[in-house]
Image 1 (cartoon, rainbow, N blue to C red):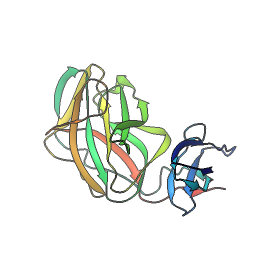
Image 2: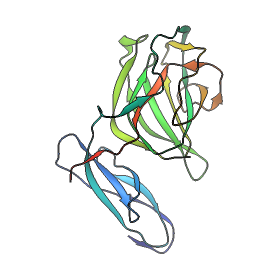
Image 3: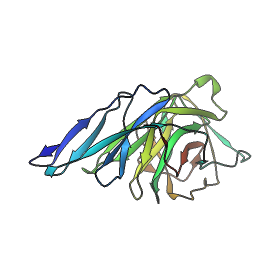
Image 4: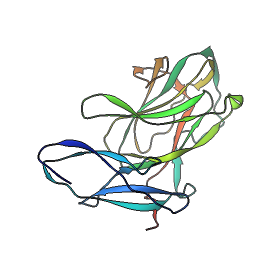
Length: 212
């Protein structure tokens, strides 16, 4: 791609391999992200020639996965039904790939990232089975989410008018800085909080297996 000035462009690629995703790299062989369900990703180019290439990768969600809430025996407190988003602000200390999300409450879970314009945009969202409210529910994301080191992300669960669950013990954060946040309504949790809600990400520090 040759541009005379910085521009936002959409790259696209497809694969006929089952259970695979498109990973996009720049000419320095740096992973810049994963394509959506159609293999597309938006990038901001630099003036001049920009080189990108796509790689088909198999998503192995069983290998080397980590999570924040690794202690399921914590005593929980119930917050009565409301319409809030509860979650966390997370700054990874290393690149990591999120495969799944876990929550003990809510109608959906989501991940957001900060942008270069000092805004916040949603990266991905996944509906939960509301009949399981009160128990840990784990959902596979439709597309893996790459979190870059030292970038700011938010993740959380929207209660959707249902009870939520929390405790007084902070979750583990071995791979970044974590802070609890909330929001009245459906959106990214932007208000600092002091309550630790049972919302989680399942991630890996290793790359996906290359297929093609």
